[in-house]
Image (tube, rainbow, N blue to C red; front, top):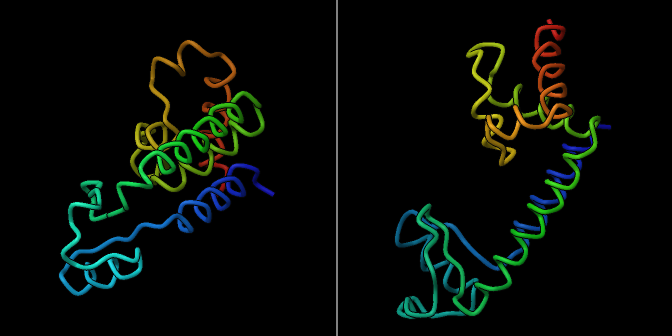
Amino acid sequence: MNKYYAMKQRHEKEINSFPMFSAFNEKQFARGMKKLGLEEKDTDKIYHNGYGGFYRKTDSDKLFDMLNKLDAELQESMKDPDFAFQAFDYELANHEYNYTMDHSDALEALGLTEQEIRENPMLAEALKKAKANQYDCF
């Protein structure tokens, strides 16, 4: 089993269980506020993440703690060459590398920069192998 994909699924489940909602119209906003136990007029009690997401101000620290914990787990796991290969391979496929020949979106999804790849031979090798694997799939 792909260890990266398993982690990604677990992280997604944790994020989805966090008390927040997305809204792109008034009806969705009203439903979301009710889900958080708030009245529609209680806009002073929520934060907007800028992407249609809303969460209680009182949950802000919990949200950032969770996101930091998930990111730290990913960064620690990327120290394992097999995990790094699986992560690159998954994200390259997810961002259509075999069509675009551009790995920048895959790196961004993993929170990595070109410089970090250049400075880390293990990550550079894992990325190289994952790129080659994208063509072995056909």
